[in-house]
Amino acid sequence: MRLTTKGRYAVTAMLDLALHGEKKPISLADISKRQEISLSYLEQLFSKLRSQELVKSVRGPGGGYRLNRGTDDIRVADIIDAVNESIDATNCNKQGNCQRGVQCLTHHLWCDLSDQIHDFLSGITLQNLIDRNEVREISARQDREQELLQATLA
Image (cartoon, rainbow, N blue to C red):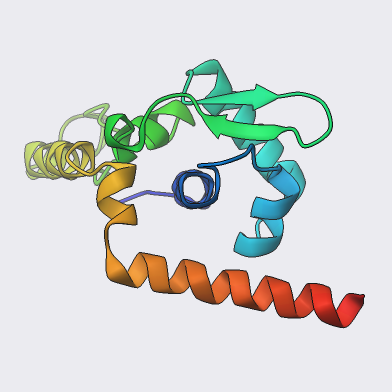
């Protein structure tokens, strides 16, 4: 399966936005600090997420990003698809040229697996992730770590 950091980071950033963006827009710099993802990389990802209308930008002081739909309406597969990430268990990118230019014996098995993974991720919303105790605990820990870091820098 080829799910690169692009897909993982996009899902992580969107979950962070969902967890922190209920009351106000969230800056990419804040997400970058909490999730330890490069700000320039987040800018690239959010450009794609914005073009697919998963997020909207808010300009001005206190600006940042907000979800463009409810957390129940954004599926993990939507996020991965928005950043042009594919979930592909084949060695041929589903092209069917896996063995000297033709399909290998197990090509359809790996295609079916890829489809099953995509279907699985289509069944998980941001809200499903937010509802998980471990996700909320990790988010709270990250928030505490950021507060401590800010206090030591002040």
